[in-house]
Image (cartoon, rainbow over all chains, first blue to last red):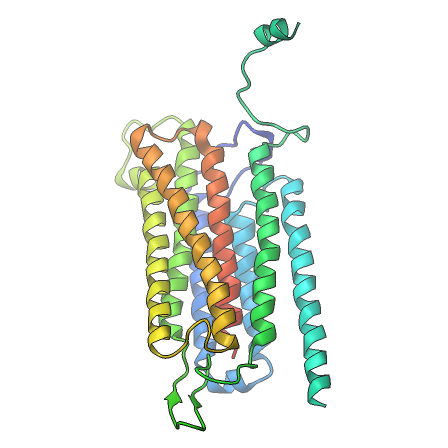
Length: 112
Length: 227
């Protein structure tokens, strides 16, 4: 029962959206990744290893990207929408990482 | 002259910008971009204060008060939050199905539509399911907040409590706004039926809803799973 969506009359909807079958696959993949994340949380050896945090961050980033690309249609929409989202997101991520480095350094300095 | 010009032009039926894009979609993407920065600041605050609380309860480990001997267990309930995360993810699926159902009304209806065709093309059903799942997520959050308060964690208790309740509370407020927004769309759909010409209105609500979902994806990992 995969149905192609009709394109909109609007130019920003000129591209095809994913099919229902793809939407179902996306939902399944999101569920599986979430289950893997929770499974990883309950593995003491994995939690203690240096791979735990990067692994969770990668899985979270993959889920984030899948939702944005397929459910928010950013993969198919106009590139201006992509810029309007990724621009502020990049600034936000850079600010977050910058603050963490800055305050982690100042905390280490205070401890010393 | 102005009157003459107004009389010769047909009424404006759409809202396109000079880019050729619908200004409502441009606006919602700009709004979502600004929301990214809001949530990044809240998440930054949580991460900066992480592990700096002087008193418990703590998120992932038990804590005993050295003066009173009172013990607080690890406060986060991962199984419950995992279920609420799953519910929110599935609400995003229901939302794309609702939008797809409305857009597919452009196509001619088959002569003998089967049961699954009717299910897949029922925007009312998918909008209702999205609302229910959004409300269920809020119910889980209300339960979580209540149990935390009963276990001794309030917004004033420690740095973890302040940053946690602020971050997840802001997210919950966004979910609440989304449920109300989707509820109004459902009411319109029940009253007169949403048509393909209304798809952009549903699309911008869907974009907002998916954004709320992706923010939770980040919160679930950074707050709940990373110890």
